[in-house]
Length: 447
Image (cartoon, rainbow, N blue to C red; front, side):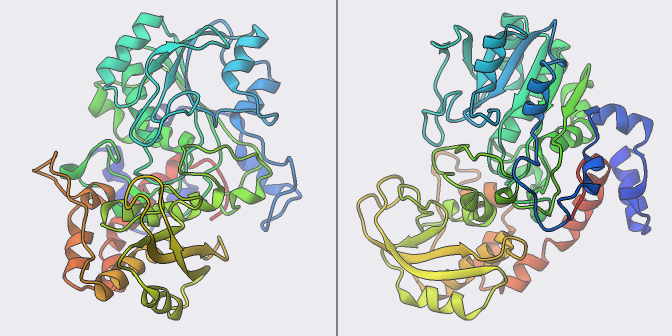
């Protein structure tokens, strides 16, 4: 019996897996953790918030320790503008400037290492003018192509340091997984410098299914996974990597965040926010994104090309009725404002759209998946023009919403007039199974 099936069987029997130690095999797959983040649960910040400077990222911890995990190695770094220290300095600039780390390559994900590219684009391969290090374009690269880059640069240790936003369809976690597969092929160590999940630690939403896997969802995790990239690396290593890569990593090390709880919003961490991508300007954007990102798969604008992407949703044919209906639902932690906006990018460029602005009034009670589904159901009921984005380049799987949500189920149910209760209830069982499967890999206390 596989390790994941064994855990699911135990979970179904009602055993408290969160309190159980990893088996020896699972522990090896999950990798080492540099420091014990659970020790910070007893700090003086309590459960309701954190004081300024209390949270320390994995990168900051390593910098203070003289980059001890990376000394004496040829290091390749997967990062972007979010890979910073508390003084806002890039980890690559700091490592190279310190002379303590032999940085032989940087690998840029979607939007690029310095963050100059828009959605679906990257910066290309070049030499970084500040450091002189070769920057490889890793966006969309297969494991085989990445392994070739690792070999060309003779990388011995791969470092991943990017601020994720907690949604399955945000591509950075899949760049990480592909790089893990490439590291297996080349025998490289893999080190994750961990950062908080800005939407917290609660898992929500439907599971990805194999027919719909793509660059916005390569493996079977739920839509809002509720894990940090370090926890995901441990999960990927324990659940998927051996089957996909034909082996395990030579070494996986997660340098954990110190002082963070899973139930603390990003605003409570005291950490600076750097846009992970051009349309993720604030932590508020990240809070709504796991739900509002579904509107990328509809004919409505998701607010790209405005100053409030994913908080402003609408179309030229939407009127005041949508905001009225949504406001009357009194959804927890949520407020809706009737809004009008003119996108300068993506859908409906230079066209006035009516719609709503989604406001998070209480991050601890806000459920982006439930809110997103309620919005979809209401829009479909109110407006005959409502429809799903159709991508002719993929005739076998033409609906983007299916790739975003992991199957045809949400689209089929909303199109058939199902209620939000019906839609969210349909994924309850698979969500529970995922919550059980991920428990041995979690690193941080809190909900």
